[in-house]
Length: 294
Ligand code: GRG
Image (cartoon, rainbow, N blue to C red):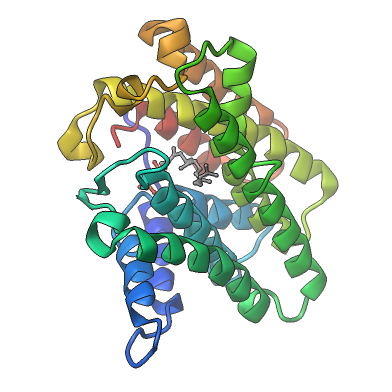
């Protein structure tokens, strides 16, 4: 059975993303603005902002009440992809079926576009998120900053980059995946619930759900890098092997890696047991991460 993806939420994010962006004309920094737009509005599954919306649903918030934060998280994800593709990191020429940001605009502009997206993310939350509850907006800023920085995405990426061409054991690989990918995914689903003043118990459940979901997501990413269809993925396959990157299929083999991803996704679903309200869409997301082809 193919898991259903919440396309209604994805389309709401897509519309908010294009509206969230200031026009680029008549600005000294116009070319950087164009590069930011190019990368941000070039498709993608919008997996993380969709999770923000689904987290918000759990606490009875409407999507439009959390869209600034949903967009901000996609800004941060886009910055990470732009920087990840740079020659100094993964040196990928294609992203989302288009030339990577640095191929289209040059390395200098791509670096600055990533930097600016990161800053704009927090500007967007500060300017537009929950003006009546600044305490909740501040809590979300902290959650997202922790998930993006040294204790999260960057911390995991540093270990990943420095571990290439070395022997990586299972514990280190688990750390890399849960930090470079898992933390931002976890912050996404928690952010929606935080903005609705969700209970600490609920946030603890979502922390567990996001951690397991993020691990399954990145293992599937490793598998797709070996077995995926380039036309569907929008980027070349085989790049992890080429760069001697530490991956789950590399350590466990393809079949076992797929089983570990499935088990993590099932744990994500189980962690939701007992929660009040409809958790069906979050459960579908767990199935989606294992079944996805891009
Ligand atoms: C700190 C060395 C260093 C570099 C900066 C922080 C960073 C760049 C990169 C983080 C690592 C990273 C890119 C993690 C995300 C991995 C991942 C699974 C990306 C693909 O996400 P999808 O499948 O992509 O959601 P779409 O295109 O659908 O948005």
